[in-house]
Image 1 (cartoon, rainbow, N blue to C red):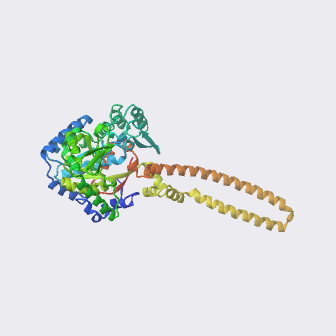
Image 2 (cartoon, one colour):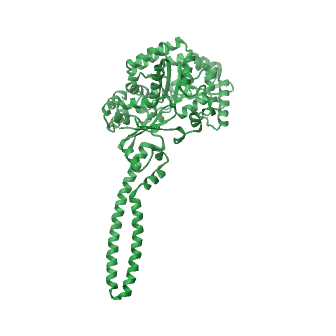
Image 3 (cartoon, rainbow, N blue to C red):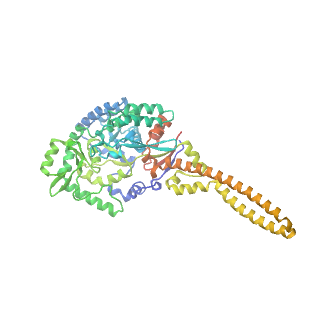
Length: 537
């Protein structure tokens, strides 16, 4: 496949920490346990000592979950290998409508390809996808953006009446039936019918955001053996109870470590991804079905306006660990307590989370996986390819914004040059007419009337030519605007990278299963951090 790789520093909106992580790791190595490469993953796998009883318990829970999503033989085989000692290559994402942004699919491809590579190299590894069902920001998951016919279509479910509940528990309701039909109506390509069938079977009124997402990914990635994990399962909370309890028992020490880490990051010129204060804890409460933040003050823990001593909070934890949920910094530590993780694929923001979480790993877990940047792509369809060539553009030109893009398109716009030449020649013709009028009048003043009439007819014809040229330019201008909008919508939608703003399914419908295979090859961790520009059919 003829694709082009772009280094992270050339991407729009890239943070300093992400640039250094990929290009100058020595500047940030104190914030991570391993270098971001496959050599580090292999070393981490060889040194991993994971409790067998925990491994078997978690694998059994995951088998139950994946059965509900309709997993296939390949996933079952990977669950068996997990029980027998395989390490885990992990990524995760919120359970967004229709799979959410395209990079959620690219994360799945990243773990699938890396687990395959490790296994081929003699390190038994399985791909695991953590569905972030405990998150309570429903506005992040209830919509997606579809690219079709050069336009952007926002597909959105109503906001539920009750907020602050884990998004994974929210039923999709009647509205999803019509929304599925709207989405399917915009699908084109050889795999459109297949994607339509998957959407019909995954997104029903009875499904939740988690179950629908799980069924979708099970159907798309089942042949690759992807294992899905729903953290809302009370059984997993039970397994994770010891480390959840430690977050309460050692809260003061952990908070001090995070405050120091935040200061170190600030001194290095990096931003904290999660703001930590003297009152912060690592936990939310899930009691009563709502996810509410837990804070600390004067030795007590506070949640929803109620306060209790540390001892009482610890008793609540022992009686009901399912009533507690980790925050963004603690979630990966809980994840890797449950799983024998050797590598985690994340985006720029997640990598910043890990730069803070490393102190929690060191204190609570005594180990940390290799953190790797997920694969990322900008897909260029044939029309976009033709337009880029027509105007002499690169994808990067679209990332510079509307004004710069239009300026460059005008620069390659022949009629614009023609307009300038027309005006220049028209002014010269007017000057020559006046000069000729004066010269003839000196020879024979009686023909001035004839000269004036000739000049009038010539000016009339020139004016008609100007109008026709103007109409032609107007038509060309409208076409240019249409071309500009097409390129912006596809390559820089809503002033963001395509992978962050557009759903992958319309592209998959046009490309089919071969597209997944091609992207999987490009998702190799051998060259982490690169953004690939990929032409598609």
